[in-house]
Length: 303
Image (cartoon, rainbow, N blue to C red):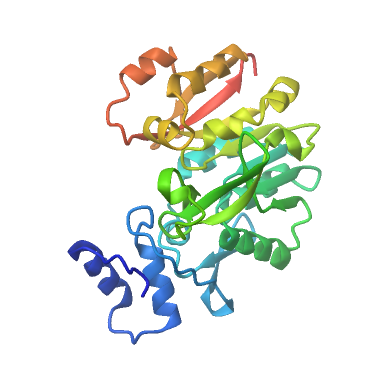
């Protein structure tokens, strides 16, 4: 019922491990939906989390709401190993009073850490298109009375309108493309889109963008804000996903930051050090595996 197109032997083994010896139940079905990559094996079924699916982790003196069935992000947070290089970079960048925009906030890990860093005089805007993730963030805001966090439960893109959003693994997800993006495919959820320029922000200091290849679309819709406020970006980058999801040449995407007077560095996953990129051309020439993913620090020159 969950996967009418069928599963291969490896996927069946993954499902069996997730269920164990437990009888069939809603909870077991939610776990099954969370352990398979739905970009590879899609399901027309969505099961929303309820109170019994919640667990909490202490993050930055905040009780962060997690989903027990989330096999991608929640489990890493519980194990203390979720994007430490990104977290360390944001810790260095954010100061009391700053405005931080977390684009692709997922379940809010960097959101709540950023809320602590900017303090009561600062502001965090958490942008998250996945409705179930947004519910978790809303619950975290309510449970902790986070007065300096605003939730924007939609997607940022190049234009106002809508896009088809689908799950990947667990709480990870992104825009669907090709046939999967059709409203008739039943593989995703239609979500509204705005430009970052539409958010009406007079000031932005730091922006984190992790939207599974749609980063170039987010930047398309942020040109006015960039020219006006010149924020620093911590941004995921993939040659493959940039071309497939944003339909943009990776060099074109990165070169415009140089034209805006920014410098680019790769954040080392082990040390969190920012290693400067000498040129976009050289970076892409030595990129290696098409599926390689890195996090970039994009800084206004002189900052």
